[in-house]
Image (cartoon, rainbow, N blue to C red; front, top):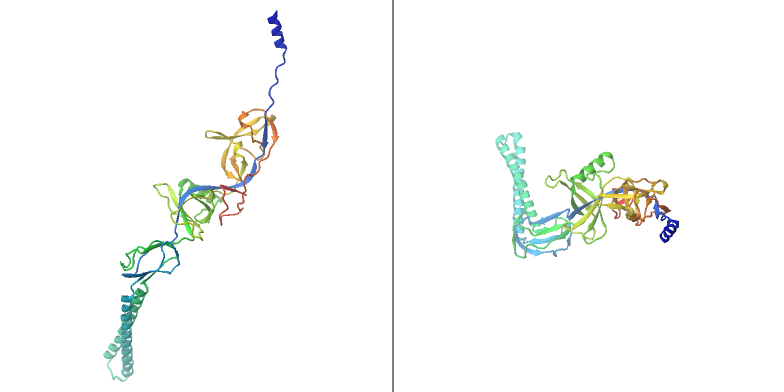
Length: 388
């Protein structure tokens, strides 16, 4: 009897109500026009990198620069003992004077012969000899002048000057050293402003750019000054800006890469050749992209997905293709539409087909994007991609 009463009491208790659907925030993704960037690693190179060698041989008598500092184009770096060259020039100028006198005598004799020839007071043979002698004297004068000019150049070359403006290296010859023309390296001068940033691009990127150029989506960097941004090893932003100036004419078959180069302004000489950096290059034409917060994206090994509010407040899982960060939000290239309501929170409690109670949320930019609308004449401010 007691057992029966207990069973009847249990059956009379009401069934506990089902928990209410979870409340989640939903919002439509932001729509932007996106331009991608591609990442590269490279180093800075001097546009002009010159090893300074003497053009005449002799002993060093003066060193006129401080090591490691800036020098101007044409600035004297070394002086080679000029006395032998000064004496050689004086001798050559004396030869010019003698050749000039001989030429004057020869021309005078020719003029006298020209007055005698019509009266047959001189033979035609003798006249021809006088004319040939005058021409020979003129040629000897020209040769003497050329020799004097060579000696004058040799004297000027005793002052070894910087061939380009830039920064000079250390001195590699000391006072009194004998240096040999065209052989002894005296120092090295590298230009610093502007400076090149050189990197190698993968074959896949090269093919992408060529096809984009053919479709009119993005001009090839071979012809257009596409923008480049560079980050140094100790920097957390891409503060250095440049433009593409060169793409090589062939790929390296050993590495499958092609050499490219950007030109970067360096007015204060902060950047030096050999410095390492990371660069990003304008990588696409503009395309429509949708922006969502990173926390709205579900990661399952290689799959990326978001929950979208469907019919009867049931959530659907959509696989998506992601892009870079823009304005602090993640670009979704495909998988959702502009009008979709993306679930922003509570993802851990959801399963596909689950019923939820939606509440209106908003997706706002989380970082400033001041990138200009039109490029590629100049580089934009730092960003993994830019929106328009």
